[in-house]
Length: 185
Length: 313
Image 1: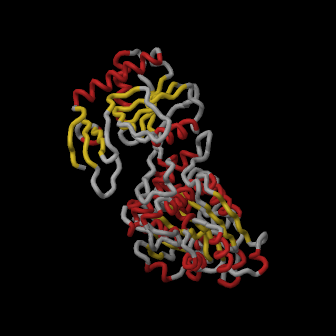
Image 2: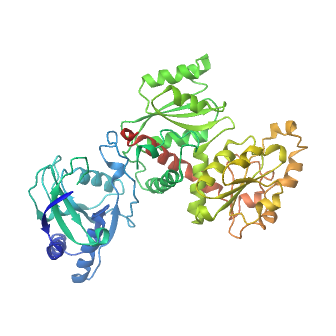
Image 3: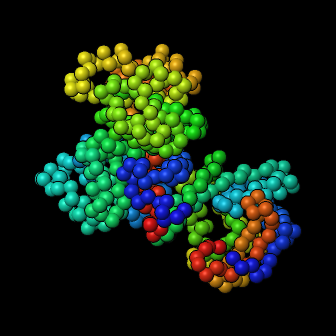
């Protein structure tokens, strides 16, 4: 990927997450029965960081789960490359919980659609909300996020890359051009 | 993962390098998780059709393949010897071609003739899983053995010695288990009556033959007792089941030579107190229940690996 610009630096990314953490608590009137579900790969550290922040100003730390949506993708009959199935770790009963699905980038909405299917197969949550660090537009399904770190208008041939220290050794969001030979955002 | 490393079929482990088998075992863990949820089904194989083609009785294996396909939302067509044109003398090839015309994506084949699954693979563009061909191979059984072993003990295959005891000659399970465990890095020892342990298997890398049972069991982390097929005893100069049991039955006393943490496997169905002592089969070392439980998730992983990402081939 050819990097064109930096959309968020480490400080801005940090502030965006802090704001989302407060919005989540405000909207849900506290952190009772609240759980954050990170979508593999970068949704997981986002969920963990949000849980930390919420724990720092509320008396409870929300539960955190990790969700792999591979088995729920809608393109498995077509794709060329076999995706590696990762473990889903939701070590609590989701029934009756207020779940916040966490991901790095919202684009077509297909990942969120798959995640919703995966979550309802685990039980019957009271409510499912959706938090993303970046919304880059170009939805293909009727999906929207409840909490957005930053809205970024993009072209389809561009790539938004969220980099998180837990996975990538730094915190940043960058915009680049899609390499001519394949590769997804 | 490159096209070269993706096997198209699971006929035996010849085309399966260690890292592909390890990937299968990792996917198995996820599939086992799916089977513990309230909704024991994922949409992963929606749109795919799996046909089971069984020319030999085996309810357990056939049902677990069908459950594995349905648990991933694949469509299933079941062909068994009795209820189809197979009993009207239609050849294997004609059956495969007919099913091919119905757009089958994957065949699961069980046949009494060694090499039948290879044959099927040469007639169709679909993927083929060998569910047992004569005495040759039964790879999904070997995978569930490996999975059950790893899940219970957590021990690395590199640091594992598997001893297989009994009628190795007639056992496709033994052959596949030896191949799979050796490919995963384990040290495999075959033991049993000399007439029932084929010399050529000792030539496989990582596999050796030790006719003296006590020596074969020494330091073993896993012991697999094979079913003694009573109908074959006469032709192999075994006086009786009792005579076999006296020399080769896997008992608590004999297991004393093994690693203290040793676990015991049996592919079923079991002749209690012939190849395996009841006290061991029902005791804490027995992996038999876990082996059965691993059947569906292992086969789910196999179907996923062979069907998803076809274009890569």
